[in-house]
View 1 (cartoon, protein in one colour):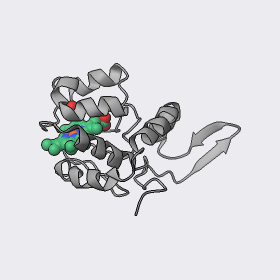
View 2 (tube, rainbow, N blue to C red):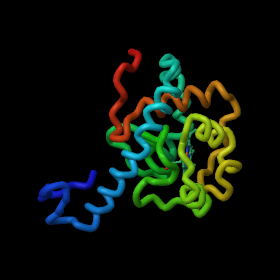
View 3 (tube, rainbow, N blue to C red):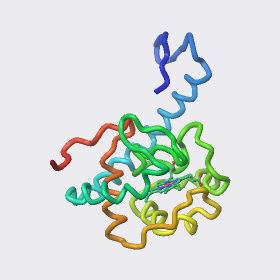
View 4 (cartoon, rainbow, N blue to C red):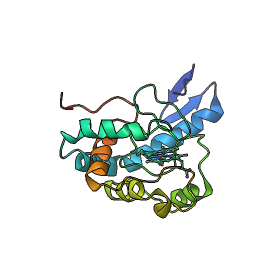
Length: 166
Ligand code: HEC
């Protein structure tokens, strides 16, 4: 996403010759994702225990598409892009104007595990009071499960995980 024309690696220290400001943000992001990688793997595996749900989840994602994108060309809409969201910290899409409610749960270190995502998608406003996500929620547990499996099938860079069913 952020491109640096000149980047030199000197004995573990990174020196960016251009775009210094954004470089440090990118470095901080990498650290954050390294720290959340372990949980991400577990959570993605958990969400994908039944791969046959991915296609069902994709159909359900139509409900989210007015506001969210996934995939390699995903960009911000009304809501942040959701690549790699399963297993990562909540509210960390750079530059996205999250609500104060979301900022609070981010400060409290909320992680989007299968369980927290499930609760949020059932009743967004109960998990994040004051959220600007204008969506009523998905009452059916099976539909939420499929949707979470679909979301888990995207890597952070928007590519699909391997071993997806045809
Ligand atoms: C009307 C627009 C809208 C719809 C529809 C919508 N969302 Fe959102 N979503 C948002 C906004 C806006 C936010 C940021 C909320 C905030 O800052 O409080 C958000 C935040 C999120 C987050 C947290 C993202 C993060 O960076 O931590 C997840 C996960 C999410 N939405 C999933 C979904 C899913 C799955 C659906 C479909 C079932 C959906 N949303 C439907 C607007 C929407």
